[in-house]
Length: 244
Image 1: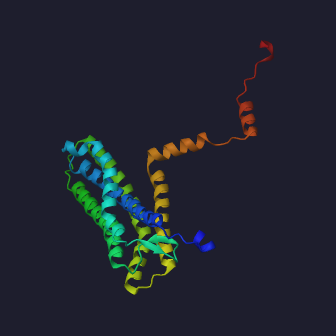
Image 2: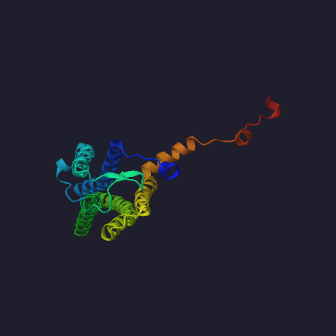
Image 3: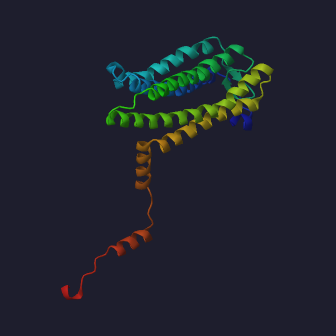
């Protein structure tokens, strides 16, 4: 916005490093859903393997994802693939760079989609192959897991569908060689919109988060003085005259 209004130049090493961090954070966001899918896979398909049920393994997975993202995206930074784009006033991968375009499409978008498809298809097949003579506790656990899986699949579908326009524009720019500034802006808008929608849906579709947010909202509501007076008058106890 500052570049469009005042035609400023942000070309610097800090700008290039910021573009590198943007790729890392987007990579970590998408692969976070892969970690959730792996947790559900181990919980449903491999419940007898106690090693897979330890929570600290999945806690360690968070910094491991960040370190992996730094390593996978480092060639783009070392090879100077991330450059300053004057028309965009931002540092990113130019569409005419075949290495950078293919790199982010494969590792940052295509691979997590493939992993999620394989994991959830495997979970679905496993649930359908379960025998009908399961105990009531096992059936309840499977039903609860199935509800959670359905919510996660809906969230993942919305997240990746909103990221489709950006990926399509990247492919079109790479094929045609026409790197329009508007295409970059639509790409970034689709990613930002997906994160906003994802945050809202996670609150709406997760009962625990929804309860916390609603309780905070009700606690912070401002009640007018007139409404308080009406409530006080409605609950006021009237004492009979013979007892005064």
